Image 1 (cartoon, rainbow, N blue to C red):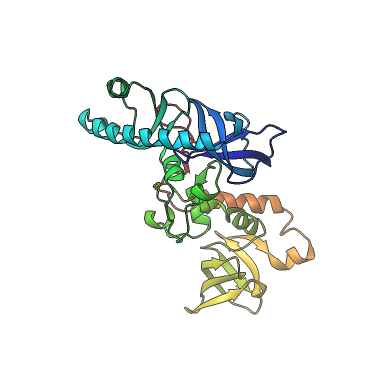
Image 2: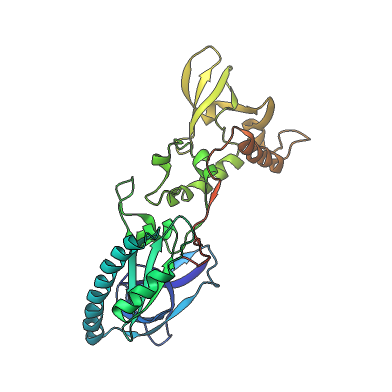
Length: 328
């Protein structure tokens, strides 16, 4: 695990990794001045975050000082100017018919440097737009393209769960989310049910994925498996609930029932015995030719062969279309 100090640029809500001097203890939500790409900007300290993602190669912005009242007053004046630039920039985007969506900006406390953030479906030629804006306001403007996940993280919103977006509240860096995670969790394959406001697979699909992988390795029946019951009979697994240790089966006599795993003696997949609970309790392998590792591999291999996946399997938004790295 890796631990980093994080802050949020108050102009754009962009999350960044910061370097805090040893002699400068900071309190959460304290206003600070950090040295970013365009110079000193106003930010809010978010605290320390721990993640399994290695972010050592990401750019880290040093903390210059705690924000004073003069810094706050200056920032409020600069922010009004930034809002004016954003309004005019959106109008000129329409005039030049540039296929982009401007949604946030940052302004340096010293000098006349600006960064405007936008999203676009592809590469954009905005040179004429930048020249016009720089001549209009006599400032140096930096247009920066980010991905749709970065946009959602900066703007925030309410998710389908009714709570604020995870990326806005507590996610420091985006991790890969796979369609197979939704498949393992039996999520309904409806884009509106498994996609966030950014249009990508919801980040929360990762939260419980390790639990499902662990249960698969322990032999938890999967949808489509045939289970044999200790009292005789059995059926085909139609759905499962790993939190209650139960599976819903269509029995051999045409009935339907929820079955506790304690009542299951064997699990068969594609005509092969993949797990025996009686043998597992005794601490022995299923057979001389089938080891626990092979069972796990069979389970994972079956996931890739059961049906065709029509959505993109791996979604990464860490890089934008112009090769520029998005926010973290």
